[in-house]
Image (cartoon, rainbow, N blue to C red):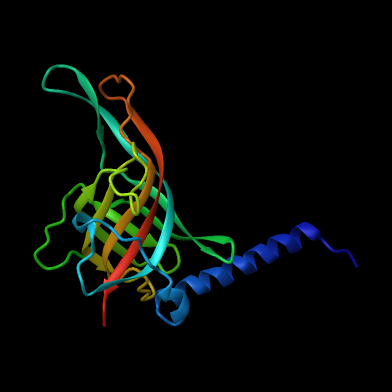
Length: 220
């Protein structure tokens, strides 16, 4: 009887991935209370602090890119400007195994909160890789990287942010990993800053970055 080591290794990896994904879901839904209680964001300045009555329940480490486009200035020169097209993939570490849990991108807000008029350009979006639930966010405030050693220590990187939900939607089968998210903090940013190179109008550039995203929901 033959034994294919490569096939068995791949099978074991898939099993570990499924097990870790199940743990992510359990933590987010509060069924693994110990792990959920360990989601503790660092202290932050008041400007990007989450309002009382909301608690962190999920954290993902992001690997992504910040886009920039070279546009003309009022003086006739050219300068890099951020574009509203964030792209990132968020992972959680379970027992040393990285599991993809969320993708971050720009999309039309399909379920805006009352009183919210979604922009035609879309909103920053986070979608669960586990149950396809989504949350749309807008920036509340930001602090410059390097201005706070505990939460935003890396000078020369993109800002650390507080974001607030302007829309949520359950997944196709009713999943709600992100359907109740109220706020997100983007902390510990590294990279992603505006390019320093001279540019030509119309030129685009993607600058890689990493960050920690902490997800909050209202206390029950």
